[in-house]
Length: 285
Ligand code: SF4
Ligand code: SF4
Image 1: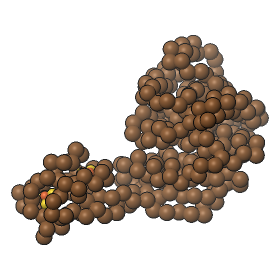
Image 2 (image 1 turned 180 degrees about the vertical axis):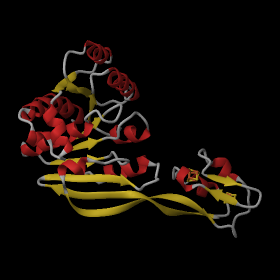
Image 3 (image 1 turned 120 degrees about the vertical axis):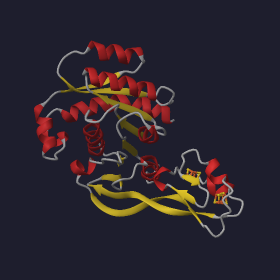
Image 4 (image 1 turned 135 degrees about the horizontal axis):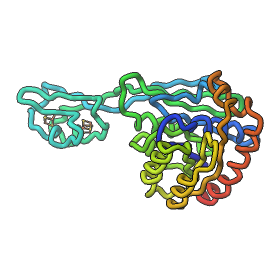
């Protein structure tokens, strides 16, 4: 069972929810993996402090042109939708950072002038934090292609047990790549005008995905009928309201988990899980 924890913007407390839910499930004697797919800025390790036992570099395939074999026919440049390979008068130029690794340019080259070579984009770490399995992806500085690395993280997930996928924030390709194959989607939002706006963008972005979903409101300090109306309009239940609590921020700033630092968090996540498990379980079955 894969539970994605996502948000329409950064800073909502998505990782707090993902980490604390993971720790709650481990405490309940379940087999759990925390998978950090926020590859541009992974920070789950700051709270879980895992012991990393396996680290591997992740690469994508990009074209390399052999000028001796190339006849400058232009087919590869005409095929590429991303302008990652451009045929000029006297040479073919490639722009690996724009390449989506579809392999099409090599396929259409009738003289086999193109070979596909590795381009390293980041690393995937594996390890454990106590009984919790830990996987995390980290893009190299300057790399812009998150989805291939996110897929590499997801490939490392084994099928047994429960995986909490900490998705990248936002509604673009990286976030959709992380959540697309999950069994349940947990959306974390703040009850502020900005938070409501970004939650609506997220609800629209995932509108065509089939899995069940629910919302966690974080840093709640009073009623917010506007966000309740929004969720009701999209038919998405509000599963939990995590109160604004200075002790959470203090624990966060010290790299501690609220699970350990704040009394009441265990009950809060037990209640959240009791609402997710039956729905996600039915979907998985
Ligand atoms: S592999 Fe695909 S995206 Fe990359 S340069 Fe070739 S055609 Fe373009
Ligand atoms: S398709 Fe092959 S031969 Fe034609 S321009 Fe591209 S690399 Fe050169």
